[in-house]
Image (tube, rainbow, N blue to C red):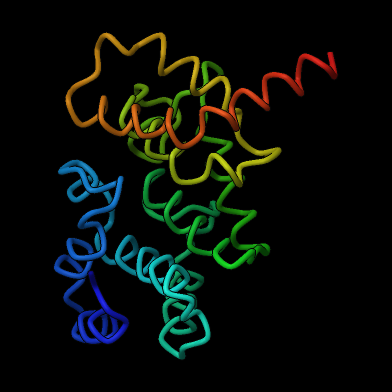
Length: 196
């Protein structure tokens, strides 16, 4: 397990790839594609915040430094590099029941990228093809905090409709998504049916 001292040491040394690898190790998101398809610096920073929160160490000065890095890296459209990195950054900003304008802007950026069928592209351009891994990863990271911004049930339905085309990594993250958020998606569907 990566300690707070190790996070601080690797982040200060700007060894983002190693830090990302160590922070992903043993997590549900630890898949080769997650290690290669997301921005290493931003993802390591976001996962550092998430890990510090899990250790109940959000009060450390390092956590403030990591949060400032995330805030200053936010792009004009509200996202960070790509949809998967944006999802990690939003999740990091919502740790310890945190929320704020930057997190909301990140969710709005993801909402603009979500296609009408519920899927997401791997890159921050909506007209690019849907990507099952990116869709599962985004919903896995922010499905419980997406609220009014993302249509989680539609994303889950889209994933179910393309399940036969999953590669191994997508199958793994989709299965973990079902375990983690299946009940959340079902609640969203029930609420929509009641309000209709």
